[in-house]
Length: 235
Length: 307
Image (cartoon, rainbow over all chains, first blue to last red; front, side, top):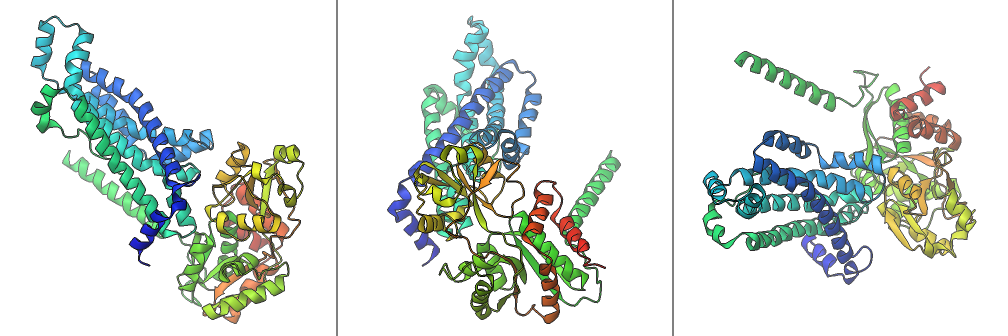
């Protein structure tokens, strides 16, 4: 049987769609690990990046410090966190959070810095206080770039959550590790495919969210600027 | 400034070259030097004991003038066996019963009789151009451990005690345990133990120990030659229905490499090996964190191999 056919057979097997090792269970585990890490990362990174961008201070410092998270390999953090906290979800959440923070800090900092100074002046001239100016003028303008940061982080986190299986965690990585241990290659390839599909789906869903969040008036005007301020990190 | 940059980049290049040289040159150079009797590639499984045994065989061969390449921690039997069949490696320290049941695809031929098991193993190996040498006296079987707390809670001493309560317990071991005849399927067939679930961890390593410690699993696969179980408060349950067979350490070698000289060297190493010795050697690696090659060298020295 060719590889494609055996992978197809693996997906077609009903027993792979139920139970503790079934695709729905592994998908839930994978999404839960990713969502937890992304939420914690966002809670740290977004206020930091937005505040620094708004006041325009210590930006380089913060970006450089958070970039250390990009330089340190997730697998290294995972192993150290496993030594420190033992078995469970905590080590993988720590490693993924460290991975999630840098793109969100960098993007939200850049997003706030990029807001046109003339618009800020106009807002001040119309009598906006500092906080009102941030919330009602600067943030709506910054949404596209901030969302791009969240999207970058989310895709990286979903792809890297595969590592959880290395320390006996759940998620789609289980299929890759267990399949390799028993030389069950259709299982390995199916696991890898599932991770890739989930990362793609994450990107698509978040792009849709982004479109909904951007104020209508800015959508057309900002269209050419919708790029990412940071690039992907290869885990 | 330009000059400074150049010095820096030269240093970087030098450091890189040194790093690569060290990384590539890590295999030990043969003591025999130019007059090598031939090259033998020794592999080991992905646990400490296998590295120690592979180093013993390798160092003994090196001392006798062979060039030895080491492929330690190569992987599981599912990786090592295809490698020796295809000639990528020449020798690995096997375990008579488990290897027999691997090469006969779980036909159930292994027994508690070492000589019979080794004979049947050779019957399977010879058509593949492979050979099992004389088994040593050292035995390392799969064993199943529980914590002292679990043992007291259910009053356990032997594996058959698990039959009635298995559905409340989680078994942990390497991923392949779920399909190996001497692991989960064997426990089901021989003892009628049906566990609540199985958790994929590692081969008798840090994950298994951590999972036992925090009660993620209640029964864990370990090896009977482990040295640290007592210290960790783990108790091995007695294999009262003899699921595990004669897993004596035995060198498995390609027939092309198995000259009379090589066989004599390996047999001499094995003749000094006992189960008690194996537990002591494992302890030096697992408890005292010595390197397997140093432990193997000390063992050979102790038995006057180099004098």
